[in-house]
Length: 288
Ligand code: ZN
Image 1 (cartoon, rainbow, N blue to C red):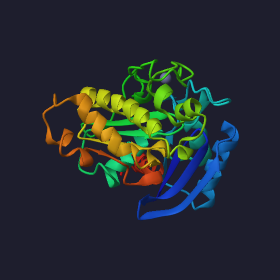
Image 2 (tube, helix red, strand yellow; image 1 turned 90 degrees about the horizontal axis):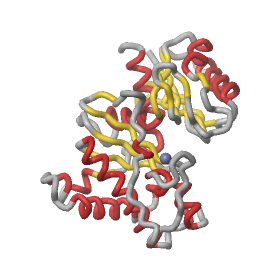
Image 3 (cartoon, rainbow, N blue to C red; image 1 turned 180 degrees about the vertical axis):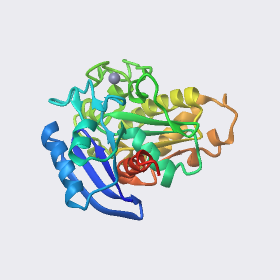
């Protein structure tokens, strides 16, 4: 049995075939264009590489998990796009569907930074902010799926007059702390702001507020912070320190004090977490 994984992002799609990190024998990345063209290219990739027993898709969203489609995305041309039925019709194999961040959480739980844990959160801080949530060994699905990136956090407009970048909410968590927000607030992309400590102090404040909310609601055994913005090396230590200060000793666990370096961590699978998690989704869909 071999499985297909798709990390379906708003700017690029990553397709892979294999059974895990040591067996990922075909991998291709291409830009996200129209739904018809992108899905056709995806199906063609799997056909040309020998076919697969099942496909898993970790998608940008929001998504309707049961209907297998992307719903209210602001990305032009993609609102209400069918994904699962199109791939299933083209390939004739089971197609599993979840959010990109739930897939990445699944991958990190199976092979990466959360092995052996059953309750944790994987954040990606990139163009937007998303959070995949595993609770009691299962990816969280409810009304739809968690939208950790859109929680509300305090916004001190004296310190930070930026109105926020979220098209739905303005200054929600994503609106204040995503890579888009950083770029709009400071006039440069985050990778060009390494020499500006005030950028990272403010960013760490917002990320810590989001992380503390999730710690208080979910009681995760670990928090993983990935995505392009987290590549700034000063950020993770600042987030740990600020999270500890905000919690203020209330939750009496060593993980939240001297063990914080092992509690708030980067992803172990790096940029492959999404596609590997999608392969794990496919394996589950195949019933293996
Ligand atoms: Zn929002």
